[in-house]
Image (cartoon, rainbow, N blue to C red; front, side):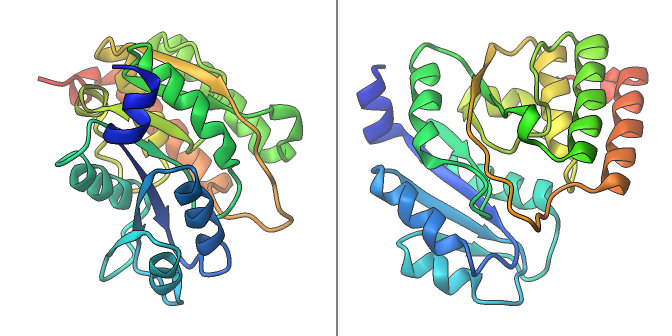
Amino acid sequence: MSKREIKKFAIKVVIPAFNEEKHIFKVVNAVKEKGFNVLVIDDGSSDNTSSEAKNAGAEVLRLSRNQGKGKALRIGFDNAFKNTKYVITLDGDDQHDVNDIGSFVEKLSWGYDVVVSRRNLKEMPFLSKSGNWILTRLARIFFGVKVHDTQSGFRAFSKKGYQKTRWKSYDYAMESESVAKIGLNKVKYCEVPIRTIYPKKTKGTNWFDGFKIFFKTIYWRMFPGTLVRK
């Protein structure tokens, strides 16, 4: 399938969002302008995230309560893959540049099943950079996955790639879990560089989340059978 055919017929962009009324309209609108259908998973927001996303032209699936990024994305992917062949996901807080979507489409057209983004770590806050470096090294040592940024939420999946990397984690550990499954299940993957914007106040993983992901990664290495797709 060519790059044009993939973009026109086979891709849906899935965006998880929790209390992102300030950003979600801009993000959805920018993606729509690129010609993609958008599904926003409102993870139990208490603000106007759902209405803002709908106003921008997105299909919205609203969860009754906050269930965590991993669970929200899994629900979104399961829904999207009922009628599409590829899914691209990016965050709803305007930290990703939608102009980079073309790089993911190109890699999908080359036959890769998972495309992982690579941020410029020099621009990353120190604590985030340190934690990311540790988790990325563990992914290489434990699972043989040679990527430079295991925690970036900007990714693309074929249906086959998702089936082999479908995560169980409800929280931010889903990024590391899916990377571990790339290695254990021999998924065809690659990475692409992206631009990332860091506002003064950010959500995402904190030091406590980082520790949980660290220990989960060790657990997955000790008990790889819990991750290997049967």
